Image 1 (cartoon, rainbow, N blue to C red):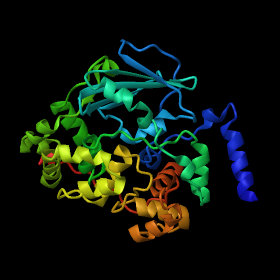
Image 2: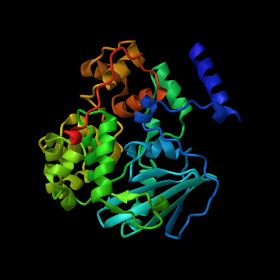
Image 3: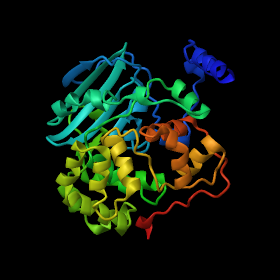
Image 4: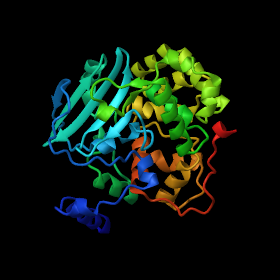
Length: 351
């Protein structure tokens, strides 16, 4: 009874005209859960004309939540959320580079794209915004999860249909702080990528390098970007079989993970982070993470020392939807108080 009353109060507040004024600011944990602040679109006209697609989703859509997991840090050169309520992305599609601008106004989504990959991006716009996701299959079974679920009705899982654009930054995030990984991604994309086609959010958007370009980056440039030999070698092995990596998008998520993990240096942590984005995999829970088991354990059982086995046991009631449940826990912002120093930042580029 108390739970129902609490959720009713929460829904009343969420639907009230002043709810947005008191929305909590994103925290480090909610940002990791894929929360990006995107201002409400006001129908501002694009700065230049590209190919256009209009689409009306049949559910509440929150661009910041759906596309947020695709942003690799606030300075990601392939992603921009602008004050006019639009989200810009630059992608290397199978038919070439493309820039996509997405804005939602009055229940309608307007997608505008430029470059050789424009049609490819627009064809997959609904899937990227969660049309292939099935949140109806999810049933919250814990108060923390239910609260986050009710506060974010616009949450859907994106499906990009692209593997390498998620694989390479995920490899860069292995065993380092997010700040180090984000800096490496920014440095390498800006130095070896190409300016995004079209107006490209004021000229500040870049398309990530093609596989051959990644393969030709000199060892000292990896070093300057702060990337150790282990991560650089993993990326080089992956781009040498780029075609086989991209083929994984046509597989079921589990088989795709197995395909990715054939490459030495790519394990369950990395493959799960990839298929969550490339496939919209609702059950691809991230294992081998330094912080996630403790966050899930604390939120669901008050156990801040939970390991992967405990986390998977706690998430078992969400079988088939474990990634969605874990993401909602991150978005809840419910984390144990820090009791140890932060992981020290390193920069091998200064050595």
